[in-house]
Amino acid sequence: MPIRQLSETMINQIAAGEVIERPASVVKELVENALDAGASRVEIVTSGGGLNLIRVTDDGSGIPEPELSLAIARHCTSKLAEDINDIRSLGFRGEALPSIGSVSRLSIRSRTASGEGAAEIGIEGGRVLPVRPAAANRGTTVEVRDLFFATPARLKFMKGERAESSATSDVVKRIAIAFPTVRFTLAGSDRSTLELPATDDSPEGSLRRVAQVMGAEFPDNSIPIDAMREGVQLTGHVSIPSFTRANALQQYAYVNGRPVRDKLIAGAIRGAFADVLPRDRHAVTVLFLSLDPAIVDVNVHPAKADVRFRDPGLVRGLIVGAIRQALADAGIRSATTGAAGMMAAFRPGAASYDHGGPANGHRSYEAAYRASGSAGFDPLRSPQRPLDMQFGSGFERAGARHGGFGEPGQAAFDTGPLASADARAGQSEAAETLLGTVLGAARAQVHENYIVAQTKDSLVIVDQHAAHERLVYEALKNALHSRPVPSQILLLPEIVDLPEEDAERLAMHSETLARFGLGIERFGPGAVAVRETPSMLGETNVQQLVRDLADEIADNDTVETLKERLDKIAATMACHGSVRSGRLLKAEEMNALLRQMEATPGSGTCNHGRPTYIELKLADIERLFGRR
Image 1 (cartoon, rainbow, N blue to C red):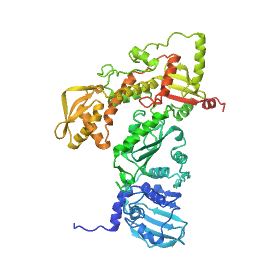
Image 2: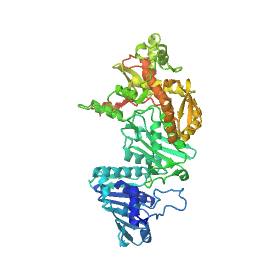
Image 3: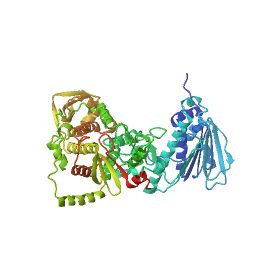
Image 4: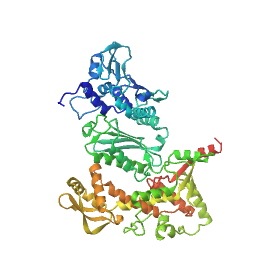
């Protein structure tokens, strides 16, 4: 077949295959055009999941009649000047309208503020209809009917009406979060309507918009983020560790106001919450990255959902560091949904409540943890046992004297001789002052596992094993990362063959790896020699470890894999070395545990992501008894 020039319609249909994946893609492109036009109100109407009808109406600046024919031509846009590196609008490629028109029946009706009347132009399967007068208010209305009628093969890949409507709703919500001053309305053929009233552009107004999209409980269970590093600013909110979801659909990320689904950002969020969430739970986040458009490429794909950063390590480090710092600064907090779950459990016939994680108990977490690859660690046989640490509080020192808190070696904590009557009275007064603390004063221990505490306005129930497990884990991590990790010298160096670029990357990070106990050096072209490994790992697959590190450095320019492996061992040591369920505690020991929880970042969840305590407000208790 001879080489020939494709027709304009064929070119547009090929472009539509990249830009227009489903009805939600059409809505995204049209809403972005409305926002670029300065709209303060955007109304979307769909029918048949968007396959039969999509209508987007805005009150933006409108399109002058002479420019309507240009608006539907490929690579015609008003949003891009001469510099492709200076993109400050949502759209810029000039492909969306002609691509949509090539696979549907498209009409555009628009009127400018200074125009005497409106004008309309249409496209049917790539065939352009002449411009004609129309009646309309200021702004633009774009109507798309019979989507993919010109390419019926694409219809076979569409999902049901409900699934397509749900995808459209998700697109609108993602865009709406970044534009709180714009009112959005989405109406479907099932008579359901999504209304997002406009707020202001203050931080409070932005949070109100987030609550409209993500639910009213999110602001009360979130932590603000505000950090800057080398010209890159990160703002937004992340959920506290005890407020999670079963999937990552409620993780929203924006780069210069553009909603994106970027694997680097998703990986950074996952890494920041790695220590405080279970493997099958996900944080709820809304993060905004603001940076110079010249150091981020949004032209990676025609759909504009992917971005590429000039310095991905900087962005990842900023996200991980900012989130971890915010979690540490927030102190200990419990999710407000915990009280709701407890209230539900008290009602007759209520099923067991899943508080942000699996409801089948601690045993399932331990089983999952063993399945994750940490089962081979035995604290009794570890070459690095135990880490040389000096614990601060009385009950920890007592545990150290008895060989840790493992079940066989546990004995009564040494709390000193019995106090006199006057001393006991003073202790009672001191206990009253504890009511003003976050976790309050310990009042009882029930079922040899749960500490019941009282604050001024609530009742707190603490899982003693989960809580102490987190405390021991944090102490182990601090000891582990406060100095170079002890290493063991291999009798014979392990030679690992790698692609030359991977070997070079590992060599560049050799100093960082040495701090974690892994000693490597170049060994000729395309190979590295491993001379030392972290003692905590014991016998390990050196070849696989080095290759995993090389892959991670290639993806993210970090060596988190090795750190995560060491942290997993510390978590296992903490699990074996923490106070067990069924362990009777004295009042002094219970209060000491509560005070250390308040002073330890991340103690609201255990190492496996389970909540360590639940708070029930006095008002909720009174409602249970019909007092309110």
